[in-house]
Image (tube, rainbow, N blue to C red):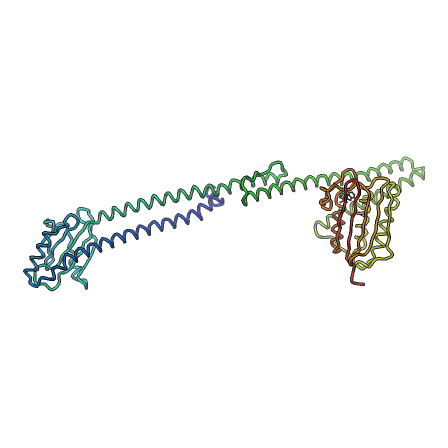
Length: 470
Ligand code: ADP
């Protein structure tokens, strides 16, 4: 479980991927540095030994006679002045130790294999590292004294390399401590960096779950202004929008229910009245009129809801043909003429002589005009005016529907075309009429814009492209 958590988490992945690689690289560098250092010291020691022995051997070449050479070798070995650091050994031609600079007999501790190997080598030299029986590590350099008549066959120079080993060990310790310090530093810095991402991400996860459950009360505190802070801001924005749309959706359901209930109440009421007064033809006539009107209103509303759902899931299509929209506009004005009059609203129609044709869906365009005129009448108080006009401008047909009604507040104006949005709750309506109208106009390649001033009135401007086909 813990293993799974570590592997699945950002911290775990960072530990395995980044820190794992860094650790491996640092280890390789550490080992490489140690190898390079020990090689360097070994080479330096060998170089030093070679130079020293050569400085001992080179004066010997002056001696031509065997006795002269032998006595010079003897004096060189016995009087060797760096006895503390080196041991100089003279070896006989048969491979036995004849003289040592320290004066001790070395046969018990020294392996003379180096002499044999120097004899076998092409240049008559051999350098090796030996561990003495005392446990001390020495470097041993042997040079064959070639073509001389004396009993001396070779000179051997030894020096302890324990110091070098100590030095390398110390370097190893320093490197390991530095490595550990670097790893701890990186771990600390990396973990606090990873925490600065993981902690807010976890918080966002928890809060998002609450949002998913419909609880939008909490907000994330964007502590930084980096990408994580931006993400927190976006989530907060999303929560506000979700909360709003949740509110709008609830309002929509309640207003639609209310909208449906009003005509149903009227229908129920008038049906009961008609039943009770079945012998009064005048009441029955009136009841039937109301019931028919309210049923029509109900079916219009259901149609609007169905259109809206078709728009939402992309099933909304147009039956386009070349049409004269003046007929549709005229019909919409006619439908509202009576109602406006009964509400004390003046409905003016500035009908043009003729308009170019539009390639569109007659029924849908009529639906748009009805919707906008319905809004204009609905949001205008008694004594107000609704005016409708249409004209051609810049190869477009423009339809203006203006009213002297309640108007729309500036903060609501950008939102009234969005679905479910109701700026005014005092009048009936579901808040989807303008959204549907706007969609239909845009599907025709046109535009629906609204200008309004609170308390003064509203003008809806619809533009539709003129058809090229006849
Ligand atoms: P509704 O069915 O609520 O009228 P609409 O989508 O048709 O829904 O309109 C959305 C909102 O736009 C309305 O709630 C109303 O506040 C505002 N509105 C639309 N037309 C007018 C208008 N002519 N005058 C004032 N407000 C309007």
